[in-house]
Image 1 (cartoon, rainbow, N blue to C red):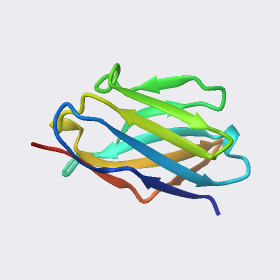
Image 2 (tube, rainbow, N blue to C red):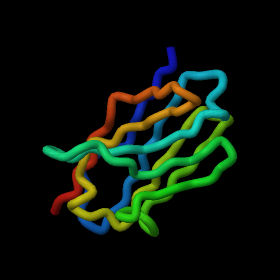
Image 3 (spheres, helix red, strand yellow):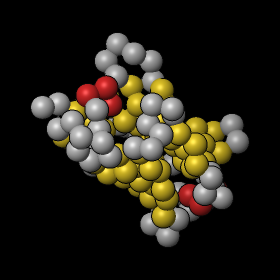
Length: 115
């Protein structure tokens, strides 16, 4: 069973930065498309960013220019660098590993942007 463990969430002031990490227990991590999603209270889960096995990235319009997704295949880890955070970025952030018809999810990490 593939396990994903997120870390790095917390409380930050508007304009601040956080870096989320997601460690994946899989010997084939390098071929997964990895993604970050988020879910705010009362809202549906939405895609934030993805990175393919080849390193191609995709971002939601709301985070373009502020967030950066990256991966370290040697560490089986995917990151989400979040800069210029806004209150509307407040949500539980989930890591996702996708391969063919399979999807695996982490337990989520809370990010709160507030003064």
